[in-house]
Amino acid sequence: MHYLLKTQALYNPTKGTIGPALVEIRDQRIAAVYEPDNQEAMGSHANLAALVPEALKHLPLKDLGQQMLLPGFIDAHVHFYPSSLIQAGILGQVGGATPEIVARQAQELPIRQGWRLGIGWYASEFQPSQQPHRLTLDRYCSEPTMLLSGDAHSIWLNTAALEALGLNPDNVVTLSGQALVDEADGQLTGTFLEAAAVYYQTEVFRRFHEEAVLAMQDFSHHLHAMGVTAVGDVAITGESPDDMVYPELYERALAKVPLRLSFFPAMRANREPLRQLYQRYRGPWLQMGGVKQFFDGVTSSHTAYLKSEYPEPYYPGDVGGPLIPIETQHDFILAASQEDWPMRIHAIGDRAIELTLTYYKEALAKFPLSLGKFHTIEHLEVMDWADLDLVAQEQLVVSVQPSHLMVGYDSLDEEVGPERAKHMFPFKEFLKQGATLAFGTDTPVVVNVTPLESLHYAVHRQTWDGLPPQGLMPEQRLTLEESLYAHTLGAAKALSRTDIGGMEAGMWADLVVLSHDLRSVKDWRQVKVTATYLAGQQVYYDYRN
Image (cartoon, rainbow, N blue to C red; front, side, top):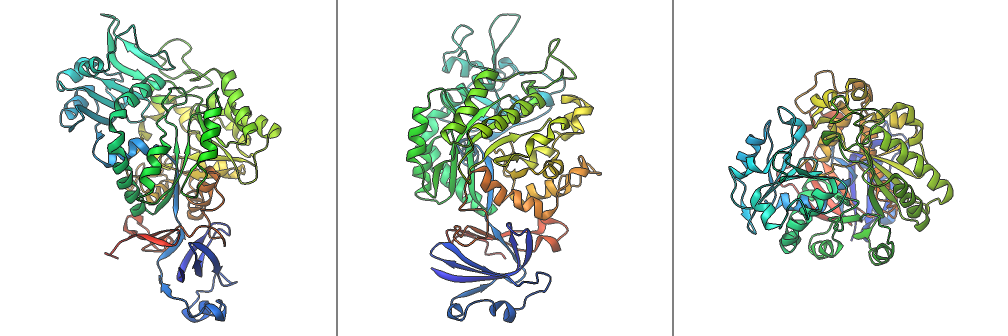
């Protein structure tokens, strides 16, 4: 395999430029990138060809014209297993303004392995805000039914599901979070929060493991069509024994459909099993990238850990709280650095963010990671700007999800108060402080969000339909080049990978071709992924373009 790609619009993350170039691909990797010294000069076929050594001019050349060529998009933050179940139709979509509306939708979900499964409701979006009850779901679903909240931090079970799992108030797991109980009769309501919710998710999902291998292959094809060539699969819980990270299943799936997958299981007190995983999975396609933990939960259920009280507190002094003891989290971060494991911490509330960044700074001072490795902090939604200087750490990546900007943006004032809301998602400010930014989706918290959509949200701070009209905190808009970096080389750093994400000689030839130069198109909905390459091999091609 030895050929050239020619384009008038190559995005080079290292240089931060977009311009004409020839890319040499040899033996699955980028061998060289030939660019004119003057990027403002639009290179013709002749003057670009002049950059190539004479000995290589016989090579096959594909001229992409004005189509844009860039490194394959990297989704730094996914939950691969449940996202695959959605792609396979095993986990359906639900949502609405009341539990009744959602329950009616649930009866239309297909029955698989004796269960109806759905995802998408938010207690904060119910009018009035409330946690749902099993009796509402019972009216529409007699089969065991489990509905995940849109952020995957809560589940809602009907009575048949509680019975199938053998649950009652006396035998639920004692993990962080909560199994809600009806004050009137002392029985379970069917709603579970945080680690307790994930524990029972995995109990139900276990019966789908064999189907999931094929589902993962379908999901990988789906990602190819989006131009995604690598993902960071992160634990969906930091406390439940099953963290929904399954390298054995991934190994089987990736043997048939290629995708670069770095997984991050939950950090545990017993580190020996993690050491064994880290030694076993170090390949170019599947590797353990490090470990994951959760400092807090989410604002919609008041489990995000804030510095001051929620605007509509559930109880006096309601600031949420840490999901595991703060001292344990501190020790985990130090231990991960000592093991030379990149660590990823979920932190949404401003107190959780402050403590995470402070502990990272301490850990990296005592135990710097090896060159090319980075800790990450995930989400950073409710940001106290007094802590912004803490994001500028040399071996730290700020991992954010532009699509989260648009999830319930009109309810942020209600969730955290107007003063905190106006300082949320400060992407531009992170860069001004010197932070390294990485983009992801957090699928299935959002579903089927393409990299082009993520770029749009970051650059415009609006939905595709132009809402809100003035943009959401418009002063935090990023440039196209800043956003592209976060979805390529920045995201590669979030995975602690130095072999993907850029256009450097020696990197894997993981590439994506877009139908248009993004600089020349006002509405990016017109732009399509025309081809995706993994290790120099074309794994997706849109024959319509």
